[in-house]
Image 1 (spheres, rainbow, N blue to C red):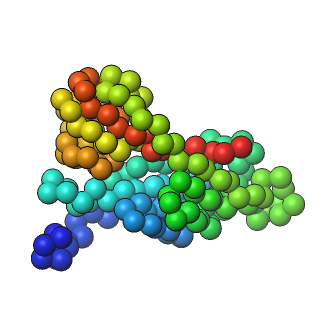
Image 2: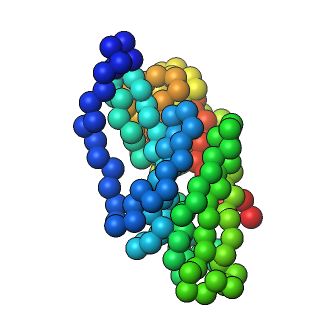
Length: 171
């Protein structure tokens, strides 16, 4: 609660045994690594509104999804976010084969693409920029407010706009 500055921890984030090995955050984004056992990095956002003040899953980046990352034994054991949140850096190395070509740092660039309702991509992450006549709650948002992040569950309709904000591997 922003007014009373009292908060209740009602949501626990969980994963495999290595989940939470490394955590990076800036503003309302939290990046949590799971370097071993299905290596991945999960990105959460804090949508602090009257409807919700919970961390919501923003995006999952699985090591197996990226070129050359198959067999990674420590994907995400080191993380960094740029000050403007447009870049996310994730370590990726293999302890078993230290001279492997997989030993690298992935640079992920955040998309900043304005999208009109009716053109949202299901499964992509957006931030509401104009509500208009669009029902963003029906599309997965916690509320119909400018600034809220959501993962699209439909293409939408109406006059609202949102900016696509998911991260993609920069190669």
